[in-house]
Image 1: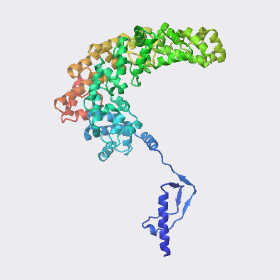
Image 2: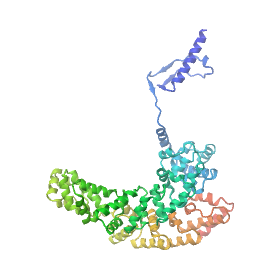
Image 3: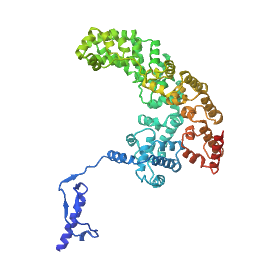
Image 4: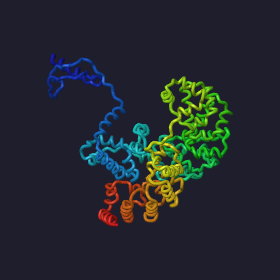
Length: 593
């Protein structure tokens, strides 16, 4: 009876400890001796020694924190070779097992790095990655929406909010997939579609044929296909509902000012968001202020950023600041009528800095208004140093500087104006005439003068300005629209780094030997940068396979040219029994030419 009571107490104590372990962690425990337990009721009591009797609570870490901490440490241990093997395995799984289109599987496998990292964490990356990962995917099908959304340019945190709760396979949402392929076939970059899905998800829910009609509706406004592609990539909400009335109004208004429809595509930036209603209001506002059509046309042709950066917000801000100084509306109107160029991007930037300078030295608003009304042209044309720099150079306090400027505002510009001397490291210092030719060419492409983008372009384009223009004209003469070529060159400047003869030879090869339309260069401008040996060798192999029914007709240029040699051999050589022999023959024959 006494032994039975002890057994019951031991069982009760064991249950209490098990329950307690879920909530509390006792500080490190030292066991005097460990025995294998076969029967809980017959276990002998052992004394536990505790270093501390303090209870330590262990709160649960958030899921995001745990993923971040585990993945960051794991990612540093994954080799580049392991990642490449994982990409190949994921491609095979999506294309061969899940029957994805070749292009879809290829893009997803190459552009879902976080998903691949998560997959690799399920296996030992030190062992045979391809074999282990293939085996894992065979028994553990993945949620296909995760790598799909990530490949469209969305971050892991955005992906987690967009993945459907009850769907796992992309084909389960056939409507979304159909609309995605409509956008792909139209030419919209896949990397832009994540933003489109996030901003205007309704686009991906249209019935069959509806989305294509909406894209066509914007072409019917007089826009070229490349311009529509850039437009809807930047402003996906334009595809929701009918043709956007505010956009159509702004387009018509700009046309009256002499700005061509497709010029809009040159000025749009993929990073920006555009408010077409505000643009239209701003144009009407300037019209009421007194700008005529010729002045507005010249203003926006030379300073497109004024309209497209912030959708004209800077104009309202500038007018607002001048009104707050105490200037009356007719005075502001007079200032801008006498100095219409003051609304240029460079002048507005200088003017804002000059106003900030005067406020920083605590000048009264009445005195600032007085200076603005008399010296607005100088304030817009001069780039000024900061107040602290000027005070340090003159060895005066801000109050003294304020008095100096009030007594003689012209002295302010001579004391605070920045030097315009070019450094010896700049490209212009070596050959002024070549520099001017090159900048003139870039200005015609739509680059803004003295902008960071232009300075970067000056380094990317090789050759004189007349040579670059000759190569540009070569693409236009081949049959591409001038605005399309402008857009193409801005996205792939390396195209113009080849001679006119080489460009003509590759275009002739594309149209007359390969049988591809010239427009395919717009989707993949890098075609013009590959050497002729690679183009001839790979497409000869592809044509040979196509004639034997072993390859799909008219695969995209990027599919054939951009993949690595190993992948090309796997999918364009080894797919036919006689393929390896034919490939070796092609390599020898073309190499000997």
